[in-house]
Picture 1: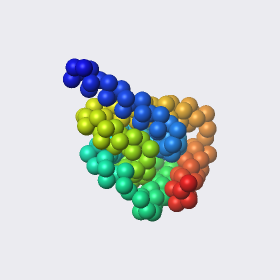
Picture 2: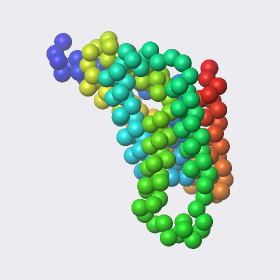
Picture 3: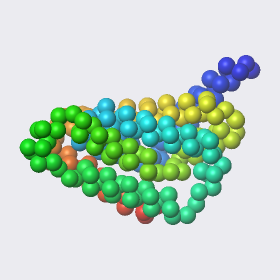
Picture 4: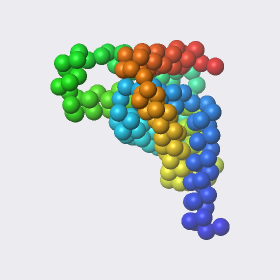
Amino acid sequence: MSADLAFGAATLLAFWSVLIAELVGDKSIYVLTSLSLRIHWGVVFAAFAAASGVKIMAATVLGSVVMRIHGHWPYVVSAAAFFVSAVLIWVDEPPKIAQENTGRGDWSKGILVCFTSFFFTEWGDPGQIAAAALVLKSHMLLATWIGATLALMTKGVVALALGVQIRNRLPQKTLRIVASGSCCALGILAIVRP
């Protein structure tokens, strides 16, 4: 088997394995949808892409360490990040400030909320464990990272499409309640792990 074929096969295997693991056993798909209810989808996707790329890189580089993480700390950090996200989403700007805030403030707050919501939650989740295991098996860090990151981006596009459709049909107040409530529920689920 040629090196290019092996690289391509490893990339496709990582894509498929991580996509299935993420769609079946991951909560960030709900966070993506919830955040897209209040924040522009482009901001959510950019923050999600950055956080996911870094997390998958960590999983691939430190595969054996990520698979050995046991205990309560990953869950506590995930729960705290979900609760902070819920508070940041809940806080509504007064109408005058919201009208004046035409660009930079909206983007920076959105990036901060979204990035922290994804980066600090669900370390050692099924997608990362799948990526770490694939690296340990194939020894193809770059192929696994590319495939796993593309899988996360695919999941993100699906979740954002759903969130944007909901956002276009519901009032802002309802969306704020739903998005904040979803983050709180995910925070509770992170603490009360299966």
